[in-house]
View 1 (cartoon, one colour):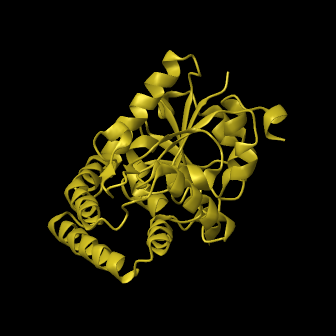
View 2: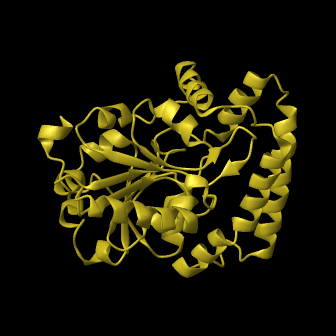
Length: 297
């Protein structure tokens, strides 16, 4: 039986965050100057700096609990930003179909790049879902180009950002964890699988990656740091895990084959890192969770 495979979008399926690309595409379509968006971005960063100033520093955050508290407390700043964007109406008048078209066009013009190996994964007879804090699920769908389950925010034609199914907005690690639990429960009710694999790249993915029973994989991009202990990625999230004392193994390590169902994963104590989806698909761990070479070759 295939695992329940859930992927983050920005920086995971794509090589970088796409929110700026989303704004550029939408405002260009509406013939609005990007400078109006820049004002909203500046306001967000002022709120973010205030959050950092009021919180423990990175060096002071030495436990998982400290890091989760820091990330969850970002919700006020994130929601304030969502509200400013909604009130500005800069993203208004765009239909779901238009959002999808803008996403597909942005990919075709190379303004957005898919992570190496993602197209290979998408071509396999392996179901996967997407979980994202992106503003528009329809934009995400246009970029992916496949009909898959996407749990993300959406923008209505009045330019207001809503959460999935008009519920609470997804904007923090806690929001994503809550959504992940719902996705897992629905998948298991439908008999889709038992083992759960989550792939992400950023702090908003932290709680999903470390959820007990979930096999968490961090997408890092190309390896840039080499030391006497081996090859390590230049990933902020990997560094965060190291800082708070969590184990992070390279997915290509042969030891990974012994994990995936043992106590460390069941307790949320270990995650893996990979440069891209090719490395994931070729790994002993992925073979071990239900994708043998007959699927990945």
